[in-house]
Image (cartoon, rainbow, N blue to C red; front, side):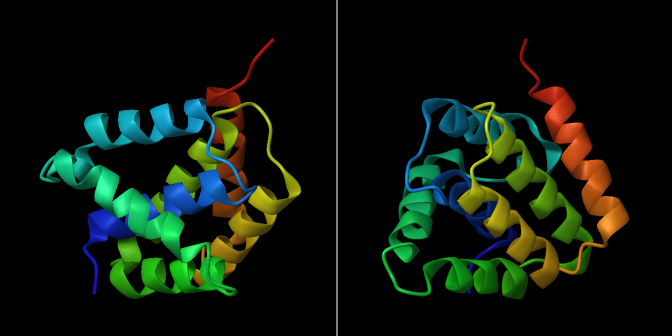
Length: 134
């Protein structure tokens, strides 16, 4: 069992690492989210590296993404499912380019967390607008 904080961090880390690499912009986005969003106000920020390492370790398993999504789903209250999806979208959008692997991860996460299409489309559009580049 992991905390809701860890579940949200897993959602972000797996999104960032889904394409096989962790871009600096993605890691900075995760750090910024953890430091600024109210949902993390009572999170012990010193635990971020350990939680991130645990999430990336899951990817070395043959079904690592599915396992990580299962952990996210099992440890989040329903009201935070759209939040997890939004945070994952922000991290994927942070480097300015979403790979096929990242998009597939987001699709899997959306389905498993039961985020409806309309909500997901709004979240995706918002992330794209926030991280747009010229």
